Length: 237
Image (cartoon, rainbow, N blue to C red; front, top):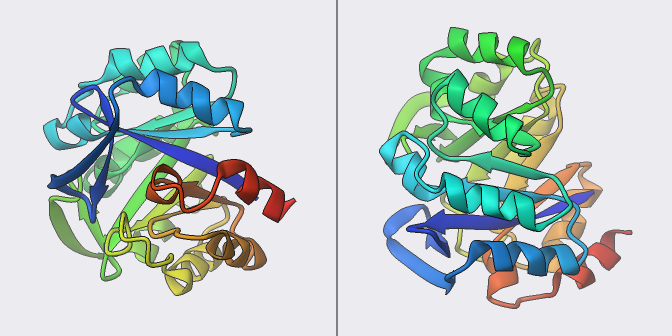
């Protein structure tokens, strides 16, 4: 199982939001690149980065901060938030980003998403964020009537790198993941499922591992020092 520390960037700083609320942020560091170097030193094999300003403004806002992270470490980075066109995808990939996460546009413009997956095979990750099982879009500011699993199943034929599945109700709450939804997504798609939202303990990670979830994103639990990344890595080896 792969563990991906999260670096959420808002106004060029490393923060965490509670349940995706932009007015409920905790600032953890002023230099996200230094945070990335720290997770790299702890044994991280990949980082998950979100441009929160970008998700809200529908365009990349913290590009320079993201690329500073890419230059600072020697492990792969995936980036999501505000990626809405081919130019942005290509720009990130050409500048060393390993994978690009597409969320809102996969739902709103599925034909475009299919076209991009053909142009960038195994480089795109579909980001599905759900509230009560329904897909949320626009940086979690809107909730659709599309079930998360149904959205993912529309793209099973594509050459996607993974699906990041986030349960918004769990995100930032340190109450444990929505295991049932993660298993449902695992069974619904052929590509790897990256669980996101709610991980609070090493036991949560062990349970995801036992459920054959191949990767998970860890945010607040690491920043609040519930456990150390190295402890979690050792627990699943």
